Amino acid sequence: MVIPVYNKELYVADTIRSVKNQRYRNFEVIIINDGSTDKSLEIIRQHADDRFKLYTIPNGGVSSARNYGIRMAKYEHIAFWMPMIGGIKIIFQK
Image (spheres, rainbow, N blue to C red):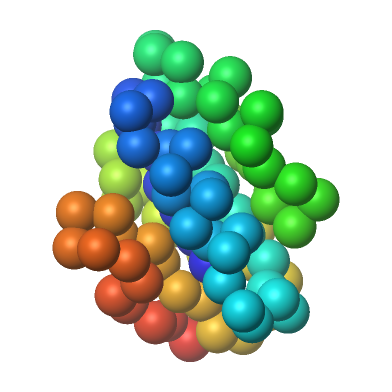
C-alpha cells in the first residue's frame, strides 16, 4: 500500500491507525512524505510500526510521490490509500 503524505497532520494518525486495524496482515505500507512542512513526519514516526516504510522526498506533488512509492514497493500488486474517498481505491499491478 502506498500512502503519499503532504501536510496531513490532522489526518495521518487516523490513516495509520486504520491501516494497522486491518484484519489482513500480510502487506507492506510505504509512506511517502512529500516534503511536508507541518507535523506530518513527526506524527508518522510516532504511529507507524515495522510494517511501515517511510521515505521523505522533496515536494513534487502527489503523482511524483505515488510513482516513488511504486518504485520502492517489493510486491507486484499495489494499493493506494485515498483518504478523501474513504480508503483504498486504486489497485495497481507492476
